[in-house]
Image (cartoon, rainbow, N blue to C red; front, side, top):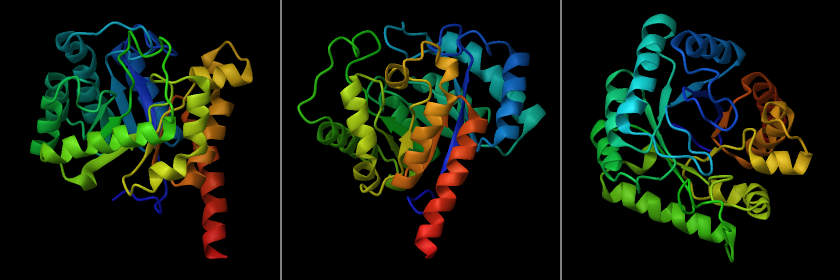
Amino acid sequence: MLTSHTKPLIMGILNVTPDSFSDGGRFNTLTAALKHTEQMLADGADIIDIGGESTRPYSLSVSSGEQIHRVIPVIKAIRTQISDRIPISIDTRLSAVARLALAEGANIINDVSAGQDDPELLTLAAQTRCPMVLMHRQGNALTMQQQPFYNDVVGEVLDSLQASVARAVAAGIDRQQLIIDPGIGFGKRLADDLDLLQHLPRFVATGIPVLLGTSRKQCLRTVTGSEQEADLAVSTAATTALAVMAGVSIVRVHDVKANRQALEIAWAIRQHGSNA
């Protein structure tokens, strides 16, 4: 069971899409996807998160049929050719996609809409007793970065996530199977993202495991001045270390090796302090 006192896990990102914001088109063939999965596992990934739809700002929805076409062969191949044990997360907003993914060996549902785009996803998670990530998002992909606004971003995101948890529990999901994600970059300004990162312990204090996804995101690019997302492994690793010290349970990253190193150092420091 994940808690703020257990060693955090690294979720490696596998986008089998042509248009994801950072690595779209790089791993959308079966051979490339399998090779990248093997590399992420060698670099220290604990979970592989597979997505067949880009959820970046201004992206268009992808049908369940197209997502299934993209992700199911990859899940099957990972299970038959690489590992029948490594946890696989399906990154989707649609129950039809998740249902087939779970049938083929996925273990976790990761939904950026927290069950709001397709409430059947909550029912599916309840029926299968599958862990589910509930992320906060203001608006949708087409609208979320059009002048997002909060009076109190930390309080409002916390309230929204608590409401999502309540909906999930009402749908029959065991509260212990839920994971919350503050949704860095999803309907947030730079100041909002920084506030959320500064107050991660407030999310951890809910007692629900927290997932943090900052990898190569716009807030890091803005702060560092880098125009290349792929150059942001170091800045992502800095947020990983922050997350570990705050008690976050999972970090979702593109660059597994750098973030594994950051996690190990931060965890060693944190454990040393608790054992002093």
